[in-house]
Image 1: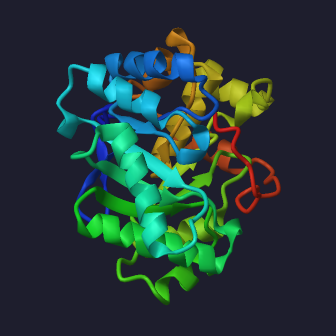
Image 2: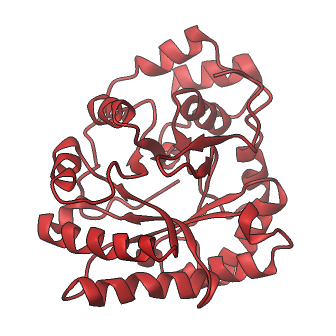
Length: 283
């Protein structure tokens, strides 16, 4: 990745839509703070906000969209559905509820995902078929998945009218690279998003990470976000602290060298949480 990348750079989805290379996550952001945090993120240059039905703050994200002085087409909003209703039609209505909360009755969502494959194959099929229906009406610009392994993606292929999914959102960082599913996604044109790029702050004292950060006069968080970008992933850091929100966006004025990337790539791999029922500490 060239250092000429900017916060305005984007990855192209299979639909042809553009996914901003850096996203802003709002998991576990209290409802009375979410709107303020989103507006702070937009102020410093983020254009992609990632929420979910499970997070309980879609309306607050929608309020930030309304309060922002940015044209709607300049924003990219993602949400997710965790579980279906009784059938495709009822699930379709549940999907439309997200559109209404975020962008009103006549609005749209840029990207909508199945949140987790662990709900089961039939549930995923019901959700995907409902999502395809909303997509066909133009209220979802792109649809994709989160926490899906290779087997889940292959199963999706067996019935999906829209395949490949636009993205697969996975927990990714130097200690959890999930190389097999990432390679599968890249071979099949599925854009990879990285949640938990900051490893829940559990690696802030890691010697290798700190060595790289010191070399570039950057924070460990900035190095981890830049690492994801140079891997070709779209990272989704989360914070409600204005200073850290701005700092996490300031990752385009430097580049990690091959030796830096090699050192981070060589970190011991931890057990994947990709299929956990609730692995939502997304920061």
